[in-house]
Image (tube, rainbow over all chains, first blue to last red; front, side, top):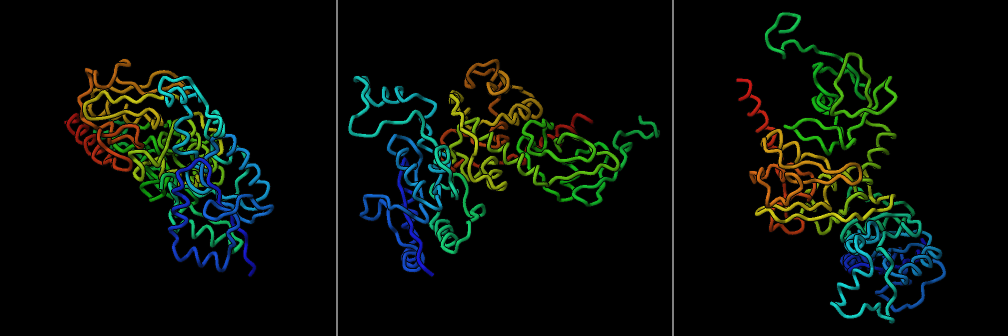
Length: 174
Length: 249
């Protein structure tokens, strides 16, 4: 069986989902030996998202203009897009700012100084939203973070060409 | 006294036979579809229903199909009758139930991962059991208040699904009627007394029944961290039974 290509992307999340991915331990080696080539990820030194990827795992909500640009590019170049974890699926903790305006947020963090959106970081969107508000998503894996067992199940199913049903394994907040 | 001359009202109840999911079942003619289903181990999902307090029919999760009725009916407030033909599971009901759960998530600010009731929440469990793995509608992110003025308890409006279990248990079991709903529709919100902070309420007895009755993390004990709040609403039906027995003495 030829290997599929796998990418992982880290948007507005805490990296906990990537930690959970690493928690697969030796099963990660097995998956990467038998089923997947990891072609793009914060865990490998590749700067440009490849032209075609079979499976991409997205951690994090869409919160700023760079996230938005990235997710559109990733969607175009990915066959099976997986929202991995509550931030990607529901916008989770990043969405707690959504009852306030961006200006109100900046006011709070600037502590009385003149308001400033730093020039060298991407502009915040008005709200942090789930990935599927902007692009179509093929598989949803809730959890904060989804367990290593859940991620292993998802990747094993996708490697075998099946669509994983995670309803028994994980839930919002798991 | 009933027509048949018996003394107790209960003795006048008739037994009716009906069909639920293709099975012939029987129940008393004062029982609801939910009562009869549960007596026959047929599970119907509910959120606003709680044993020991009156039925409300507000959450609409227990909607069932009844032959001859054009609209879906809530099982918790629909009384059974002879020859009823009921479906409690169908593709249509499942899709409606999923949609209801999704709408509940969009109407509040439910962040399971940081909630005191994470792992012990009826909304969260219901989402999982109905296969809600994401919410298709846009979230509304309403501005809701947190009332932490009470000495022992907190009300977090972000997590309230307006099931009114607290309102009913406070009124019907405790007899205080501290809680009520203010406003209408999407602007509805839970209030104590006439909108005064909970800590200043003169009617609240601090009994904590509302906290135990609450299906989510909207009402919780002070000092509980994420996932630490567990609730024991089972004793409420016992209290209600005792109260009823005392009143009929």
